[in-house]
Length: 271
Image 1 (cartoon, rainbow, N blue to C red):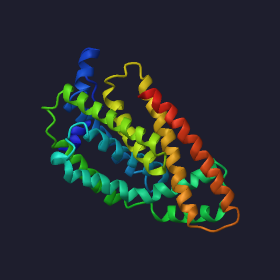
Image 2 (cartoon, helix red, strand yellow):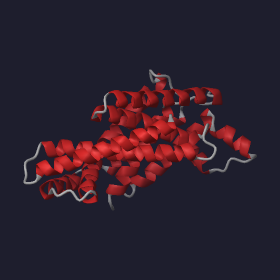
Image 3 (cartoon, one colour):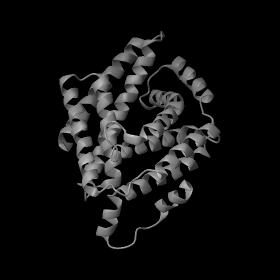
Image 4 (tube, rainbow, N blue to C red):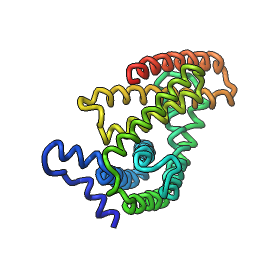
């Protein structure tokens, strides 16, 4: 049944621009968007055996999008969605190890960090953690079925607007904590809240007619993501010993500080 509903995501919403906007900014429109994401995730699973790096990244992104959108239709306690939200987290965690190793390996090349020993370790682990496509698909199908059963017809635009404003307030609160205590944990929490805002605004576009805010949010999320990747790389290097490690850690720390300053400048423009 839920596969039939997923096809709704492919249909064009007929009528005027205003009618399409109203449909998108409703519970039904939100459900259609999430089922479209599930359809895309199923397609990514088929690519896992060929080349796991890209599909794993897209699968994790799809699950993060659904998590963010669910926050628009549930209260802070999760309501009746707590059961299948756990499946989303399980799926993200299943793919996390491979994604982390891939990102760290890419960062070594991207920033020309000289750590060949770490590079070999990451590559070997990456090959071993591609994930089981059958189990991943089963988890995706569970999430899809539960999404299809959500009671969304009573969710109005006014409620979505309030929930989106709540996401904005949470992101602002996390940014203010970064200003008071600019450490890795604070920026990591800000990054998660900004991703909620980014993915929610991607669907709703309530206060962003020209897309300027969305583009700015995207730049900030990218910057905070790069910062988080450097934090993970530094943590991994702290547990290793090799020639040149000290200089490498200094380079990483300088780049982190640069990213933090840029992120706060963009954040002030958004809020």
